[in-house]
Amino acid sequence: MSNNRDDDIEWFAEIFKALSNPNRLKIFLRLITCCPPGTIMNIDPDHCEKGCACVGELGQDLEIVPSTLSHHIKELRRAGLIRMQRRGQKVDCFIDPETLKAVKNFFS
Image (tube, rainbow, N blue to C red; front, top):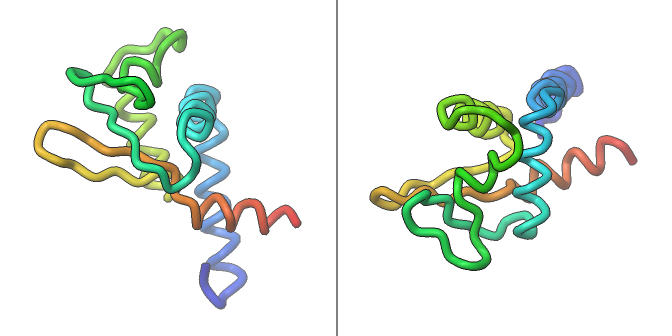
């Protein structure tokens, strides 16, 4: 967060805009449910293990195509809600704990 309140408002508006889409909100809630914020999880669709969520699992029951799911994940990342890190063909995805803390503080 910045020292400028207007910048903070713009930042929070981007976060809430990203979460205003029902599918993105569902994806975000699935990520936050399966792994505590800051915990890295593997979302490689070819290598799912217990305790990780694959891209297909994140979109399960949403009835959206994989390209749309990827778009929603990209929007969550752009808003700063999740972080992603590529390791070869694998992509690690996790909730940004600092952003989550800032959102919590926004409402308190």
